[in-house]
Amino acid sequence: MWRTTSRACASYEAQYANEIVAAASLDDVGRHPDYLSGNANICWTLIHLVEETGRHAEHADIVRELLDGAKGYY
Image 1 (tube, rainbow, N blue to C red):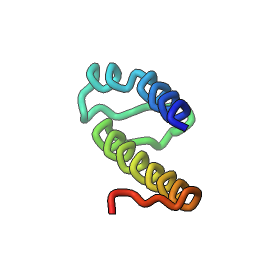
Image 2 (image 1 turned 45 degrees about the vertical axis):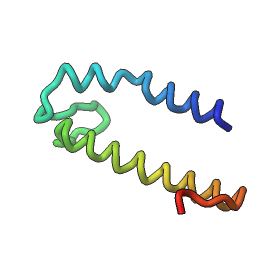
Image 3 (image 1 turned 90 degrees about the vertical axis):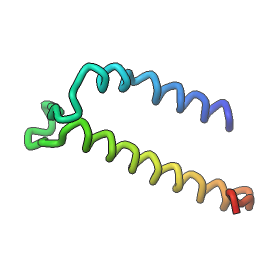
Image 4 (image 1 turned 180 degrees about the horizontal axis):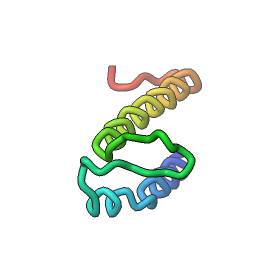
């Protein structure tokens, strides 16, 4: 499992997000040809990314607890 997690984290980091954010202002508005009505600035996008990552990490934790019965911190 740890190999899979390591690969997932490496893939996530390989998306060059740091370089994109460093080259832009937090007030810059993102553009994507498939989302014509997008008005989200980079600050909102980063906050949303953290929220979604946390939400899905919690889902994975719940599945792991159901599989092996081990609890998290408490």
